[in-house]
Length: 471
Ligand code: SIN
Image (tube, rainbow, N blue to C red; front, side, top):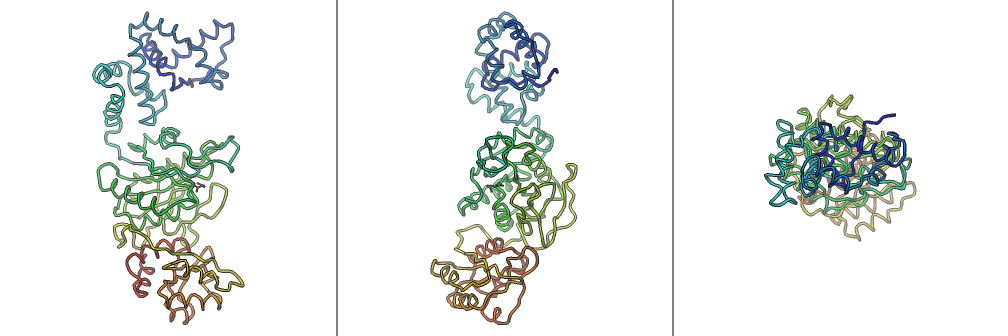
């Protein structure tokens, strides 16, 4: 079966440039020419030219077939272009394909060979290494004229994960792919926006730190205050994605869209979900309706508010939900549609700035809890404790005693619920008298984010209660 997909290995710049130049001279597109060239090599070796085999075996097999010397001889005979020029033209095509997130074929279609030669003549001779960058800027500007600018910030996670086999969805390494590789896997991004990538970190998100949060929020604020980004997408591991999203919801000072996304299957998996999630996230990031709605999370075709969303499943691509209030909208068939708007304060209405954050611990309530860990938190220097209590934030009697003592020592105590859905509201008069604060619909991990930012400003219980009612 004849395949239309021909891989010219990026490493093979010299030959690639030569194939480009020869194809152009002979009036063929690169694919047709490369196929013809490969076929002649197969035939010369007495083999049948089997396109399906070629497709599977390339690029390494096709590299073996290219006889560089012969290719250059043929090149010199046919087009009179020097090897040096052929090499740099190949290099520039490679550079453009990578930096503009294009496939080889798209780079070839978008940049005619004669134009590339003209670029080489104008910039190439002086400083070839930096000429690629200069040309990419010019071409990016042309190709994306009138399109919104989206910056994709990579932080690691499964979306950038690599597994030993396409069937593996566990036991992989998170954060292996670099941001350019992630973008190159989704060339359709270029139809949505002028997209470029930056790397913040490359971690498994269980290892998220305050330092990275502060750097991330500073980067997002800087990008959105400039003309460089109409929206920002953050590719993140799913395990702490909801906490980062809520931290940004409270510390980003812009109405422009900030969208987090991730993946449940590594990039190397069959039916990887990352590429579609990334594309949907970019679609939301350029959507006018997304502006002013706070930080959003886009996963599996759903749009969630950073305040409500949580990871509800450990495996499976439908891993995110907003159990109490539901999602804000959907990205069905590539079109973002919003059905409601978050009403709590966020982003430009937030009073918080990212600063050094005090220690706040979370305790998970259980039958027979004796309060020993609450005492341990105080000894460890916690300025706040979030108790993930039973039902409506109920606290066993022994733990209540320990938390009352903690509150007397100036530690802020927030009652949340270990239940997935519902609200922790004011319950026992003794809780109110002790100065405990109800988390409202915030999960324990979100309540911790809010309490840390709040405690950086005040430890007045009345103020803290106001904050938990307003955010
Ligand atoms: C991570 O959170 O970094 C690993 C898990 C994931 O992204 O799904």
